[in-house]
Image (cartoon, rainbow, N blue to C red):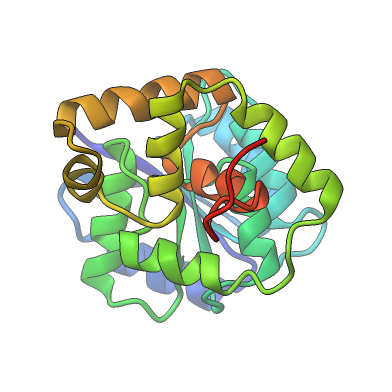
Length: 223
């Protein structure tokens, strides 16, 4: 399968470098380049990419607003955030908006190619280790209102689904969750899928952020 990729960055040198790097992959087709979020939305509607590599800080419309608009579409492409920061607050907001993960701009070329392939295949590009680091770098505790809203949403989950969701929030892989909760990997995948559907989320990164907002990563329990 050929992956249709749209590259969005306000720096023409970055766009040129990414196009050169990714265009050499046999299974990736660069269908377009955009210089800001507004152009990204217009190009995505016209070109129908499978994946969008999206910079965060851009003029006119930033990557966050563009991600929210793209992910709200019924035929939404996957979005991977491009950033120079490991846990910038805007990156966290983009992940909450439905981005499939993020890659640093100084990431090795082979890893960026791999990230595009993984996202196109439905796998977020945050490894368990990165998820754990991301959670620990959210310095400010969730405000009471956000925590209450998050816990209310998580009330929709069955007990076992909630246990799996918390494990996802701790950055556990499916295999680690299966071993820790004494269930099979396919059963873990089923619980994750059901949690996503019940919570109206796009990927397990959003589950992790919701569990964090609910304050359940420090041993607390939902009330």
